[in-house]
Image (cartoon, rainbow, N blue to C red; front, side, top):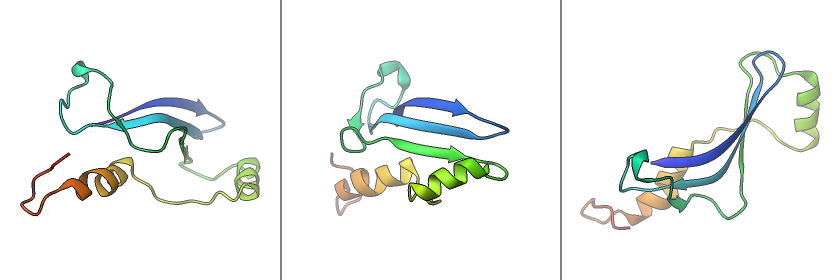
Length: 98
């Protein structure tokens, strides 16, 4: 289960920028009814920014991202969690040992 605090901003057209703070996960008690707690997925203070642009990127945003050295990449919170937190804790017998 992945849980995070999200700030979402909407711009011109279909432009959307989201910031996910306090990203955490848990492998037991997988219902939200048990609370919004979990183990941090990233280091303290790290924030995940996602820019969603279904069509053409506005020129002003393209220039800002280029100046900041930000370029498109693929990232999955679920894949990262599995590779860095779950997979290293799987025993040779295939059991999760947290």
